Length: 367
Image (cartoon, rainbow, N blue to C red; front, top):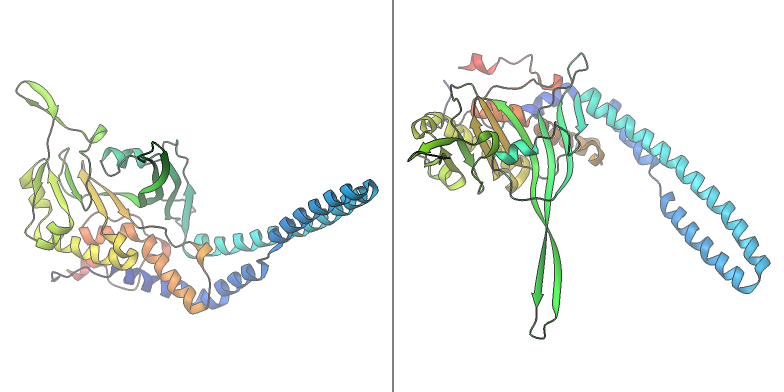
């Protein structure tokens, strides 16, 4: 029998599975790969900049004093710069090669991770779908779109979530008593986190349930519902629902087309699980973890979570113990769709090879 606190700390379970699978290779493979990257880090970019600037000044000084000296300075500068830039390119290629080896080892081999950059105008861009769910305020720039998911044994990728950062530019103009106008530009971060879609194993048809910790707009586009009111076709209004949990109501606003259906979906067990999920997200992402928006309709749960930047292989530094902690953080982040599915009783997506706990009994057998 599961108690009211189940499940919790699922990110720790993912980290434990990662440690069993990847931990033994930390010292033998990962640490040498990171050491190779550190050994190839260089300052020849700075040297090249100083060489180019110094050569330019010497050449100008030479021409101002005596033209033959200027010619000689120009020739010597060209030789020095050719040599410096040659060394810079050589060392940079070596650094990129070492970085690619580390990236391939961690992401492709150990974590079985597929990282795909999505073009903003690509049909694979999910932002418009989540924007139609009402999750985002106006934005004018998308800084990146990365699809993340596991690679199976046959080398096929299974995208599970998209990480992105969106901002908008706000211009403020102030006019003083003398009529002088000052213009200030401010960059506002609209969203920095992950978007994912999970299947909902319940008979919810085209009715909508919206659960969000932030103020969201009414769903529109494909999520819009219309109904006849006084002979006119109008947008269907969603009704506010308050589950019997003060903490849940403090964190989230719940709206639904059908109040009974919404209460049935947010039964006491799922409300407790939802709060456990928030606790897990707070551990993983700090205060940002409370910013969670979910739209449930037509057998799908559209989920957007503020996470900030995710752990990347490019951030791995320090001792083997430090790297192990960083890997644990990465494991929790990569298994975020699985953590959410287990917390909220949604259909779990395909797991990463390292995240498959073959030795432990399945959750279903723990009932």
